[in-house]
Length: 76
Image (tube, rainbow, N blue to C red; front, side, top):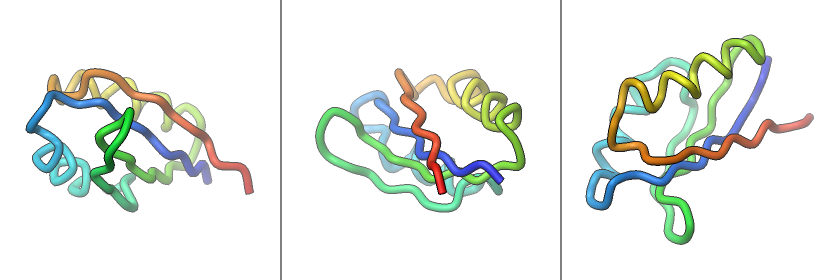
């Protein structure tokens, strides 16, 4: 199991819409709209690093409101 936190910068005003869309995905365990350098933080759990890579790459392909992402892989 791979746990990661994905920090996102999104189009202004789209934070709540993007967060709601993310919560519909089975890999997403938690989402919060935050203030500061990033707009959204998302906790993801997947089976492998390859699955994480596919998820992150697919984020921007599926949602043009996401401008930039930073992924932090959790170590347990």
